Length: 103
Image (cartoon, rainbow, N blue to C red; front, side, top):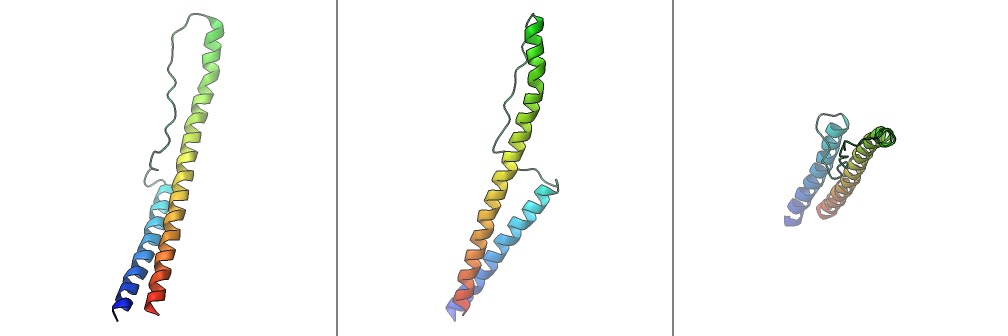
């Protein structure tokens, strides 16, 4: 009888982990909350330099800064997805253990 209670607790704990992972991922991918910032884009310092050649090189680096910001966002979303995949897998394993204890 005691193992059945522990089994139900593990089952509900595993389902709760899965539901939390799905709910938080749903909020992030619908832009209701922000992604945790693990990767931050590098800040490019603007330097005042005399000369046309260097000025054109700095102008060419501005799209690079935008690309670095987009890559940081992509890596943050990829990291979040991997973490949620691990969390959902852990919830499934905990629920499976709970089901085995109930039987």
